[in-house]
Length: 388
Image (cartoon, rainbow, N blue to C red; front, side, top):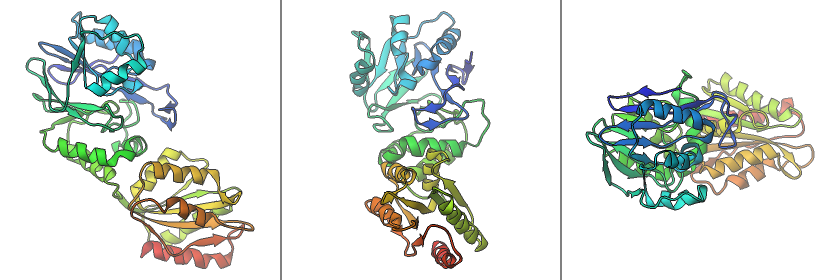
């Protein structure tokens, strides 16, 4: 059971999930995930979101232990994604006098998940800037469409200056994991929210008008100090600016020859003084982490074998992921390999030509089957251009 008093009248009743293997059915989470939920106990009692169905029993136990025979007045639904909203129907049945608070888009979406749920007389519909008074505490609602679903909203608690931020500022990992926030928050943001940078920028402009002292997200730790740091990270990520100077080399290899070429380029770069040179195997390493690193650094090298007259499937998939997340504002170089008709560089460039503010480097490296001594001149030239 996990219920923790966060402030005088605000409690955490969320859960940690250490058994989940894939978040959203695709993202590897070796350290699990937290489903965060909160309760404000004032003259009126508001529950802030539910949790995933995987944690139903634990969440209700936390809720009841915190309420101590009291009954909630409201369930505030900030986000309808099932990892936060799966227990709406059970909550409504458990507390027949409680009302649901959310915006029109949420109420339009609820029947898609809960076909037989009757909310007649139990809806409190809010829009941008509306306020719900709980007594000493009140919630002002901030719409955040497409961060990262269309119905998303946030709630600003006016007394203690807390932003209940829905999925924004979340991260992978359970709350008992003591790890660096940046890495798993970045992987979370780029892969889940990354497509919607413009919408996040709009949200940050709204947030700048609020006196925010704490941020309580729906995943990951509550942020209670140095908020400028986290907000600045979101500003960088959502404006598609490189976070660090560095070179990310992503390769797709069949028999190891393209891998050897990628690793040789890393060696040459580091011998020339390059910092932050990272290499990944797209067939074996976590694809979400590869996407994260491509966004983190300012230079990207794509190295692929030619396969069936096109790209090796893992490279094709990687580029597709980059495109879907609006990859932009980077320098990109190509390495291709082929035994009789190498065309991978051409195909990779064609795939990326529609992206914004991509600078393609002039030096293309072509390997015929295996890296040979004569090919090192090509790698030297590419390294020099990458460092120029």
